[in-house]
Length: 268
Image (cartoon, rainbow, N blue to C red; front, top):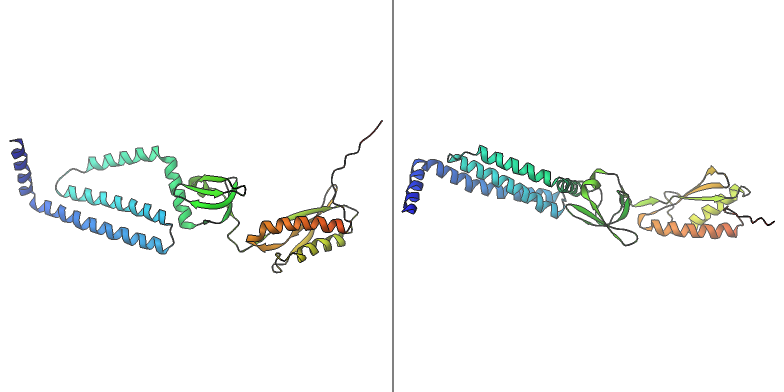
């Protein structure tokens, strides 16, 4: 009995609003088809621009669901359903979710910016947020680094995208900055020749840009030289350690003293 009553009401509603129901149905069918096409085109554009595949999928789904909701609201409004309260409920729910997930949304936005503008990529050695390491993985919310000590570092993308980032791998060549101090009794010209010889004898030190040795400071107990070899970025730490070792050996061979604190024992 009740079923027949509801069926009669439904048929009566359809009869009175036949045109609107047909229009709503067409809006729904055509709208969903257009949404599918728009999402497909959007993903193709992102793919051509090199946007990360994870971000492509997430943004594609986000755009798709947003447009589907818009199509659904448009369709039901065509048959006379009041949508003002429905939209208000969606807005309130969206605000509540946004406030609850404020940190996560900031990290998502940061991840999107990193994937779009690419200040670094997987395999780059970077310094950020007080940490340094090789980029292991870029996720939508966090970025994972592998430290020189082989420790996993997880940085939230929100803070990472808004902070300073030093990318040591972006350029093909890098300058190694070293400072060496010698005694005030040392012949400056001889010291510079010894330091330059260390650089020229190292096959990993580039000829162009040319390495440099300059007197930088007359300190309290030493005459300090800055030593600046240029290297292929991948050889940075190798050259850093090799030049340190070779410099000590060559200065010792030349009889040039490297000042260091002395302790004098006074006996009574």
